[in-house]
Image (cartoon, rainbow, N blue to C red; front, side, top):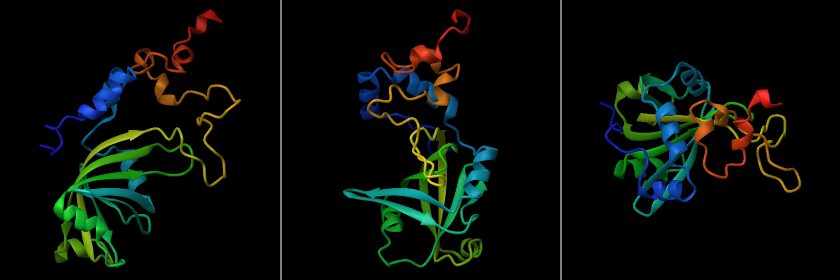
Length: 211
């Protein structure tokens, strides 16, 4: 059994804000349709081609967010929901692995700043490996981080296209009216349960025969 399957996807603090803004239905639909415990084929391709990702770790009041980089392929999918990456020679602070040694819970974000590729978000349970077999799988590794994952991709709605130096068209800007809806709001399991007051609800539920 996956280590996350017995844990609720949302805690009380998240639920409070969902209820305050009428978002519980939408949140639960996203959980039901997008959360999974085995990487999809396109996610494997995306991750194994990634030259970097972000990782957050915590222990008590110590919070750290870091970027991990390498040549594409430095992150390896080694099981249905297991990934590994190498820790190379660094600055000797060991903030990420130090936190993980005390608290295995981590958050990962894989993102391409192209304005179109969806982000892959991961809740993980991490362990630090230093055995020879693990090190041999990752050239140049000082240690290896192995992470069991709960996966939920989401859209790149506000992500800028840095390659073409183009901002996201979805960011609200004064004088430009309502930005276009993201694709996910048009899906059948979402569009009719959007929160009350959602700026795109009338547009994505528009009757095409009424025109």
